[in-house]
Image (tube, rainbow, N blue to C red):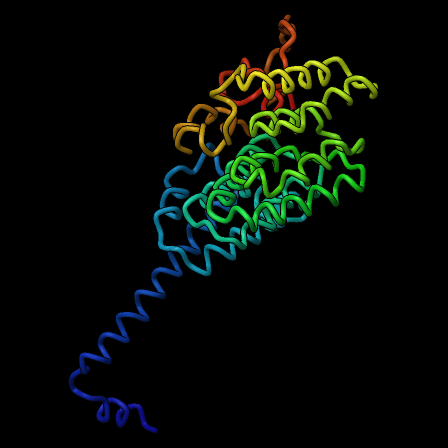
Length: 308
């Protein structure tokens, strides 16, 4: 058809329905372009922390595009040939705080069960995210967490699955009591001391005699002995030495912006910057229990911060 005929056949005026559909499509196109632009910034090297970009994505309505992007990046967080810069999984894990979806459960668990070449910032953000998911989907998260822990213990792995333990705070302790006790007895439980502390926080009374038996019959290091004794005392006295830390990380951390502003300088360094620093003499510090507050001031337990 001739272009002039096309123009001639075009209605002089759009109907209200046609106008609505056209504006709707245009709005969707602009929204997609904006999301793609924000993704591009997070996917590439950024000097510092992209607070504004993260906040923009957090404030957007929940969408398939954002959900799928978070899942993809978390699933490939530690891939050497990933299509995004190494900090990106942390940024998307923060974005996920306001886009919670049950489809995030498996990728978050994977962060702690697929590698021991892990990253402290992503560990704590993943732990925060798992806690929020456990609040929203307690039974589903516990089902998947217990299955993952059983599998990884059977492999005698040293992967950082201790970060999965925060899900316990939102579980029905009576419903899962048999599993908690069975796992405590397992000699292949690598993260015995933080596990015992979580059990003590939940006040599972039947765990105390099992911990005493472990102290009596197993050869364990001094730090683990100390933590087990502390856990037994907490169960028997119902008093926690550090009550402010006997809660999930997602309930004790301040807002994400306040938290990460304290560490912004860590993200200002470029690869190779460490060569510019003068070598300093190591500090002499007193011995710190793994469940005591970390001296760095993060507000976390030592075992989940600088003691990792």
